[in-house]
Structure formats: structure tokens, C-alpha cells
Image (tube, rainbow, N blue to C red; front, side):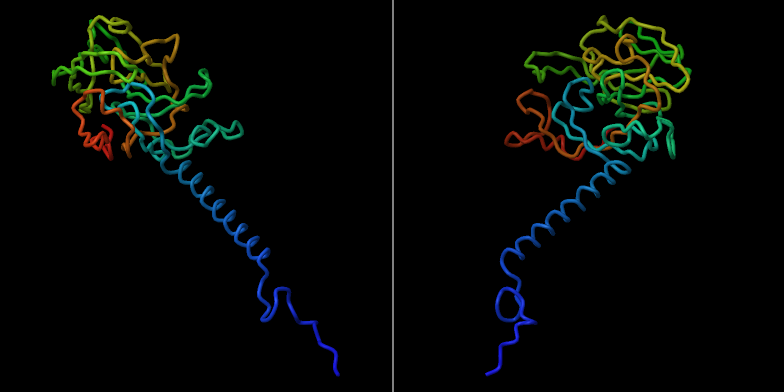
Length: 265
């Protein structure tokens, strides 16, 4: 009798099949690799393309509602340390492929003096501009910014307060037309300035004029350096807006479809 030759046999029986523990290990490794590839792709896409933000407050009503999810374009202003997650200090603040913000754009920016928190406001004043609020009216370089009444709106704010505001179309120099809310023309920031915007800085304001702390408060936000801009708000993707607020928003069966996929102007 000849001895059985086991030299070429593999664990797991006839035909050299892989054992169950090995197969499970290979599947787990493949899953980890797939997750790693997806994560790397997401980091690259959100750093150099678009990233997602949510709206937590009413400072940009009616343009943006609490609960809106938006895409912000990183391509709009170029790239620096604030384009990358966690704002790594080894990346310089000087921008690559820099493009200056334009008046009327809705922009996301960060403020290192406020713990690198992200904010979203509208670009109102460019470097060198003279900005003033008089009796609730906006003046840019001594010129009155025109507004026209659209309607009066009564609604329940996200904090549960009853609010009554006037909604206006405001036309900025250069032709950008956008909506604003005004509850009064004698509010906290309705008679402030003049402000002269320093070189390399921008004057930012919320569209909810009596519900926004912005560049009108120099002791808080103040002028925003161009280096701190993250990107331009492009579109709402979906929304968790509370349909019970009572605004004229398309909300079939409590779903705010009227806030889905809207361009941000």
C-alpha cells in the first residue's frame, strides 16, 4: 500500500475550498475596504465639491427655514484651511483658485473667535462699502436700497412664539432681488452705522432683519474676513421644516415638499 500524499491538500476538504472562518474574515476585510473607499470619496467630494449643512435658526427666513438641509459649493470661493474638515492649522489661510464673494450671495463662513462655528448670511457689503441702517431701511454707499411689500405673514416660530412680519422684495445694487422679513422698522439693529467695510472683509446680514445677529453687531460677528468663507449656498436638498408653523409652504401629509430642491437666491 502506498502512503496517501497530503502535500497539496488545503484545509476545508475536497477541492481545496476555503474554510468558513477564512471566508468570513475575507468578507469582513472587503467590507472595511469598501467603507474606507466611500469615506475617502466623501472627504474629497465635500472638500473640493459640495458639502451639506442644516439650518438651525430663523436668521435667514424666509430664504431658508429651520430644518432645511442645503448643499454648499466649495468651488465658489476657492480652497484654504477652512475648506477642510476640522480646519487643520497646517493648511494656510491663503486661498487656492480664489474667487471673491459677490453682493447678494448667500454664503457659509466660519468664525475662529466663536469656536470655529459655521454661520450662514447674505453678502451685503463689499470691501470699502459704507453700510448704514436708518429707520429699518438699508443704505449702501449712501443709496437707499429699494424694497417692495409682498405680503404680511403670521406664523409660529420654531421656538413656539407667535410672529407677525412684513415680507418684502429687496433689490440690492447690482440687481440681486431677494426676500426679507421685517417685524418692525425700529428694532435693535434698525438704526446703526455707518459702517465702512475694511479691505479684505465683508458685511453680512440675515434676511430676517429683526431676527438676526450679524455684521451690524461689531462686538459679536462684525466684519467677516474673506479667508473665513467656506462656500456659497446653492440648493436645498430636503427639509425637516415643521409644517405646523402655518406658513404658505406646500406640505402634503405633513411633509414640507415645498422646501425640497429649491435654488437659493
